[in-house]
Length: 110
Length: 111
Image (cartoon, rainbow over all chains, first blue to last red; front, side, top):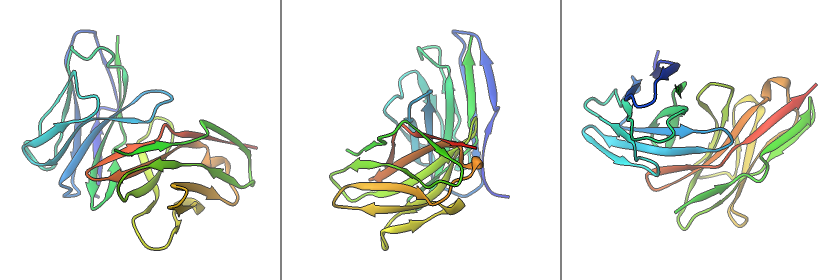
């Protein structure tokens, strides 16, 4: 069964700790994206990758890092430099001109 | 650069009534247009998309949207809503490599 998986669904961390969010897809899509969603706001682009071993910062990439070593995987690390990390994080991949989303990870920093 | 405006942040409507969620965009290039639905604590699910061809697009769950190039709009409509349509709806445009999303409209269907 093809799709995009994100884990964990809920994540709690102490302030000052780095944390890595997982995103995996078995759809054979080349492009993958990370977004952040805050209450009452749309989606804001953190990072995107069009191909393995290549990625670019989006509109709000500061305080985040990514890697793209495999086509299927695009993990996001929220570093301690990110001032307001508590948010809902969404991963997506693209087929043609259409974007498909994973179920999201809700990160809460205490 | 592209931008998306969703004119209504919240739309309350009674069950079985029609609804229209408004979306306007700006872009200097040709765009593709999308509507997504998001239920609480879930990802976004594609409702429908306009890539080319007929300006009236039909999607899942009985929704449809009409692309109007002269008014740069892509409004979402449903003739009769159900309680289960209560959710957040996002309009999005793609011009170039990236997607730009509107702030969302919360549709509340009342019994």
